[in-house]
Image 1 (tube, rainbow, N blue to C red):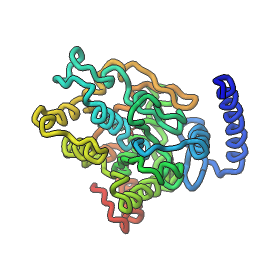
Image 2 (image 1 turned 135 degrees about the vertical axis):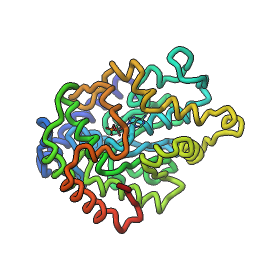
Image 3 (image 1 turned 180 degrees about the vertical axis):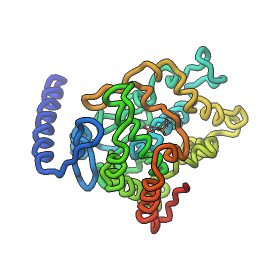
Length: 333
Ligand code: A3P
């Protein structure tokens, strides 16, 4: 097929997808978010915004995973940015000149590019970066909705989850960034009430996490599941674990040279946050343009204590116990 025909075909497919999405959206239950003029639609059991549903449908119909692909999966605000930077640094480490992290002597693209531009969000771009070997991509799509070729190929999945109350607080702050950098967060109670009802970005949170958790128990060779909090407690251990899982373990020489430790420093919140690209750059999501800085806030464990009232915390903890109690997955408070 000639190139012009290919692009015409893509345009036709796009129009077709738009029509399909409009028809689908018209039939879905929808709820307006308390922050801003944004609707979430209940699609295949999860609350998703319009632009992501469009991306998801396009992926489900067109995406074909390869055995060597790497998919980074998460519920938004669980540490995706961190995971992206770590996996990028691990997989690209032979291209890097590991010297102490200063702005003038390191050649990692992480110094000049936001991690979200290095590893695309599949439902947003619909395309992995083809010239990246292996292809590394990211998604917030729930396990049950993933394209079949991801589930049935040897493609590896790395899933990060985080204490639900910290995810809520992080997301509550983040959701205001769609409307400007200087808006004071508001509507805490309504937002928390919706979170507890499962109405949240790619929520219900518990169904998202449990989908990947249960699949990881069944297929530990395919899905590596871990918590943000564990990554915080022992970053180097998990850097090595991820490298091993992805089939690219550190050699004894690399360990002696301190490469895992350098990756930890390169990808630390303090370091990434200090880079000019992450202070001033922009990132587009759907119709919105966000500052790269929106992805780097505090990165603290237990920040929920600074925002939730005792009653809200009690409700949240009870809910988490109820939803995760039987699963073997524990969150500490
Ligand atoms: P807080 O809002 O609690 O600070 P995501 O990347 O999934 O959008 O999640 C964003 C959360 O991860 C934010 O949490 C952000 O500060 C934190 N984060 C971003 N980069 C990080 C890093 N390199 N190390 C640890 N936490 C990081």
